[in-house]
Image: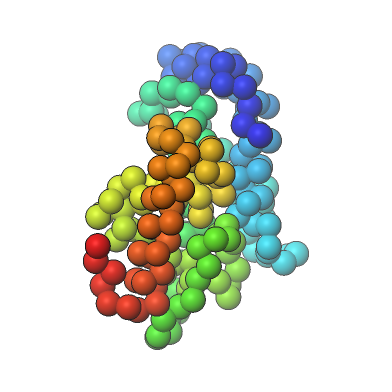
Length: 193
């Protein structure tokens, strides 16, 4: 579960204010949660996959500590940004693995499962990412919910906390976003509405 709000928030604020020792204290508190997020991505991968959970955590960690213009406010913001960075890492990995032709036709993707990158699923992941970009352009909050739930593997409760909305709102918008993305990915028109 996500570490105690008070401890993480205090350390994030101190780190934002330039206290490097706060970063050293923060790492053990957030490491388990970063590994859980990464594990959600990689759970169904076969052994020997080119991108391992520890590599995903390490890359996300490096990108997180490199965030210079972020005024850290709380743990929910931190883990939300971590989930977003992991999504970008996975998409970059998928694009590298799928630089050849993507193939034609509709791609079936389950939005109820957490994203996992294999060479076979790279085209699916890229298609979901492109569809998510379109959704986000139309409705930023729904796009953020999909990003946190699908790519970040966050629960409805965690997603609500990160975004600052109620759990029923997350549930309602998650259902609507999945339906919209499904129509788009299945090639049923332009999925307007």
